[in-house]
Each structure stands twice: as C-alpha cells, then as structure tokens.
Length: 199
Image (cartoon, rainbow, N blue to C red; front, side, top):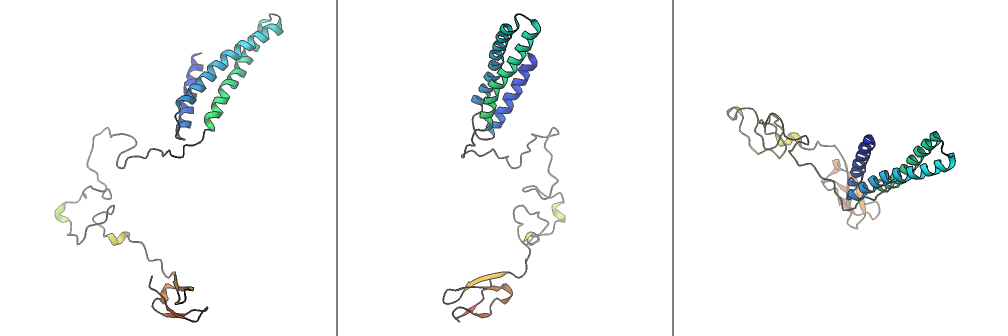
C-alpha cells in the first residue's frame, strides 16, 4: 500500500508537469489521476472479488486471483483515461514558457559567495588588467564586445560579389553583379539604359 501511494504521487507529479508545459492548470488532471487510480483499484477489486467468489464456490486461490485481476482492470480503467486526457490536452496559444533571467545562474547562488568576474567578455565587468597599462581607446566598444578588441573585429565579413536588383527607366526588373556598380546597362525588354546601383 505504501509503494502504491508513492507511485500515485510520482505519477500525479508527472501528469502535472506534462500539463503545465502546455500552459494549463495541472490541479484538475492530478486530482483525476489520483481519484482514477485509487478509485479504480477499490472498485475493480470489489467487482473482481464478488465475481471470483460467485464463480469459484469459495475456493481461496481463485478468489485471490480474481481480486488481483479486478484490481488491475479497475486501475487501468480508472487511471488510463485520466492519463490520456492529460496527455492529449491542447496547448494554450497564449502561454509563453518562463524565460531565464539574464545574468542569473539556473543553479542558484554560488556556495562560495560572489567573486569578481574574470571573464573579459562579460558585460559591465572590468577587465582584469590594471587601468594604467590599458591603452587609451579612440571609441567605446559596442555592447558585448570586450574593451581590448576593436568593434571592427566583430563586423560581418565581406561576402564578395553579390547579385543586385534594380529597375530600368520603364520599370523592368534587372539583375547585375555588385562588381559592376556604377556602370550602365541596357534593358533587354525596352532598350532603356540604367545605372547599376552600389547597393
């Protein structure tokens, strides 16, 4: 009985987490699971016991087997629909899962207390080098970029020539490589002349 109760508690916790991930209140589904499990065991056991006693004419072994089969069938009939209902509940379209707070560890505070960060990439933390040895910076670094690296180090790389789309004077869509920027091109549709733009 004690193991059965522990299993019911663990199963109710699992059902609650499953429903809560979909943005629904888990209490109703947990109550249905507990009532279905315990009620199904009791009702199934009683029915199995009565049927076994009538069919066996008082044979003790048959009565015990009938009781066990009735408990299992009642458990499946009571807890099964509750579990399927929780598993197939629709997701709330307005639910957004909680987001972690930036800068806060999901594991809680450190048991060693707070120490100054030695990570030069962390925002808002000073670099571990002394201020006297740091060369003067001509411009402030962008957020998230360490102060000892220029912002241009994190600029997107030049991807090379690319296709540009532009229109001729009559409105026809033309395409040309970016290496031809500033040159004139004749429209194959109307014969009009258009200049390839720089971007």
